[in-house]
Each structure stands twice: as structure tokens, then as C-alpha cells.
Image 1: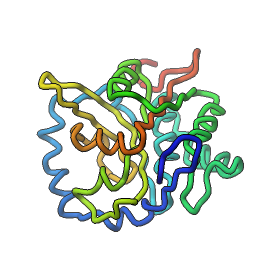
Image 2: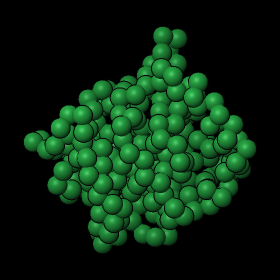
Image 3: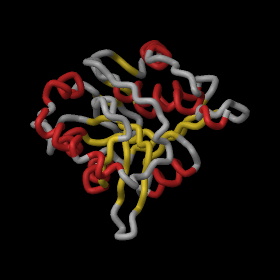
Image 4: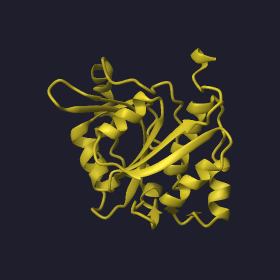
Length: 221
């Protein structure tokens, strides 16, 4: 998908991405995850992971994860997909208007959302520290180029960031729920995520529960 202000998001690349992932590189990264995960940022790591299938639904699945975490209830994919189709915000050829999609989130009873093009990764950190769910848009080629043989114009992809931390040496560390992967809270260093995020205009969508709503963390019920 291609993120840009007031225009469409093409998610067509994701239909081929799962098959295109080089399993060897993916497993190698997974084998390193335990050591990286120790001490990794963890503000919202209690967020359920929802994977996409072959349909280009990464943004919709990230919205689903965000509402699930914020309210404690899984709204299902259709809660976002159907109104987005009806409002011509999403079509099944793989195009989603990101700016207008925020309105679909804001039509939900339990959550409220805000979209922006952030200036820095501190915006991700600050939002997570406020217990907001954070969706970012990344350039698919930049994000997956180590693992997949994608074309440079492959479009974009949505991730749900579950943790962020700026380390003492100034480097950034993140954990993400990626609809393309089966591992929740996958550790990603800033050298990988931030250039891919910048290539998509630093697209940031934050989701929080509406005032008076129930916290989605069962420990707080």
C-alpha cells in the first residue's frame, strides 16, 4: 500500500508478501528474538495479534488489534471492512484511503482515533506511554528488503507498535504486531523500522478508549 495525505493506500503487495518471505531469513530472525526480547520495550505488549490472510487487510487488522486492546473485545475484521467498503474508503483491489479510514475508527462506540504525520519517533513513545495503541505505516520494500525480494515500488504496510524505547546509546528499539507474522511483540530495531516509516511520511494513527469506556487490559478491570 502507498501512504500519502488525502490519497489512497495500495495494499496489493501484501497478497504476494506471505509467499515471498524467505523462510530461512525469517526463521533466523525469529531465532534471535528471545535474546532481543529480554528487556525490550513493553508498554502495550498485552495487545492481541490478528493476522491477515491473502487479502490486503493489514491496516484493517491493525485497527482490529487496537480496538481489541483498548476495549477488551475483538470487534472482528468486518467491523472495519464493511463500512470502509460502503464509504469507498477501501476496495478489494487493495486500496485504502488512510486519512478517511480514521473516520471509520471514530465511528466505533468504544474508541477514538487520530491520524497524523509525526515529526519524530518520540511521538510513538509518548503515545504508548499514554496507553494509546499505535499504528504506523512503513514502506514495504524498506521494511522487508532483508527478508524478501520485493520491488522498490512495492507500496506500504501497516504495523501495530506495542513497545518503544530510546536506549542510553541513542538507538531506538521497538516491538511490533505485524499482521504478516505469527509472532506477537516482534522485536525490531530502529535502524530497520525508522527509515521504512520515514519513507511513508511518518504516518501515525493513535487509538484510545473513549472517555468512560472500560480499559481493555483485564488486569485493570
